[in-house]
Amino acid sequence: MKFGLFIPQGWRHDLVGIDPDQHWGVMAGLARRADANHDWSSIWVYDHFHPVPHPTEEAVHEAWTLMAAFAGVTGRVRLGQMCTCMAYRNPAYLAKVAATVDIVSEGRLEMGIGAGWYEHEWRAYGYGFPRAGERLAMLREGVDVMRQMWTTGRATLDGEHYQVDGALCFPQPLQGTSLPGSSGNGIPMWVAGGGEKKTLRIAAEYADYTNFDGSPEGFDAKSAILEQHCRDIGRDFGEIVRSANYNVVIGRDEREVRDRLGLIRDRLLGAGVPEAKVDDTINTYGTGPLVGTPEQLVERLHDLEKRGMTYAITNFAEQAYDLSGVELFERAVVPELVDREEHGHLWHLLTGR
Image (cartoon, rainbow, N blue to C red; front, side, top):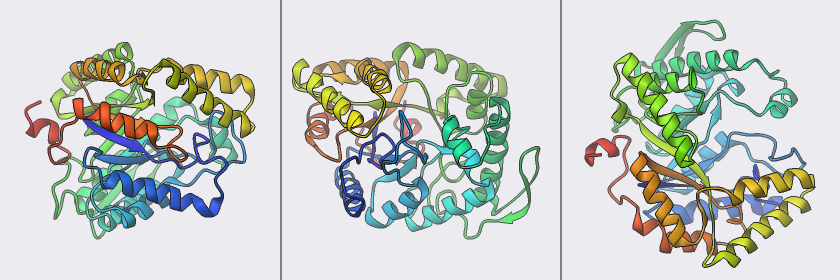
């Protein structure tokens, strides 16, 4: 199994109480820490502008600015977004930005992409909020443009939502040209979301990785639908790595787990999040698969691995304030599961999965 780590950027109210002049120091320090630990294959941020579970005036840092910044302060770990909202940036422009980050990072970029869902944020930034079918059509057209630009250096599309007429992308990304990359995309493409008719169909057509429901039952259901889409288009289902995101709340015993959940609750209340939304959030955290003692988390991850979930991307809500949970996870959970072979976009095929 591979492991990724979300770096606190504010979206989950995970920089509350830290002065803005310290934010980059905290984020860069955590990124460098993950870079130095080879058990972490990747670091991640969210592509959002307003925090959850309620939009407050607490800080949220922009994803692609952080991609470039992390590229400059790390040298090994791969860099991803979970996930970039297709409609927030013109896809030709986004492809150009991603190609530059791939070069700055010397070939370490992962491209997370999805249709978007956070209505309050969409409307606040003037994007409107198209119906789901339109957002998914934008996603399909956008990934087509990105694939063209990364693999051929140019793109043309007369689409319903995007019109691109010979957009150039030179230099092309390092991945897929001078460095190993995705055979289909150049930069490895993560299509995120579990929409069964359209999102997973797009994933079957374009994705090197998927990212959807991480519960055992949900993961099985989405996997079966993805497999059927692959059969329908004649693609090898095994070519696609299936990943999921997990909020990790780990403790040496149940009391320590409860204490961590209580601290998350206190921080959200202190940030001005309405109590009902705080309670819903804590319930979501508390019932997640990766909440419990190290022994419980190892058992659950082994079960998920048997189901085909081979890339866990983890979020520790307290990471900017307290590293003890991350350290316990690194010490007592990761060694039981981690694949320490050199990471590449075809690692799951090369190691005989």
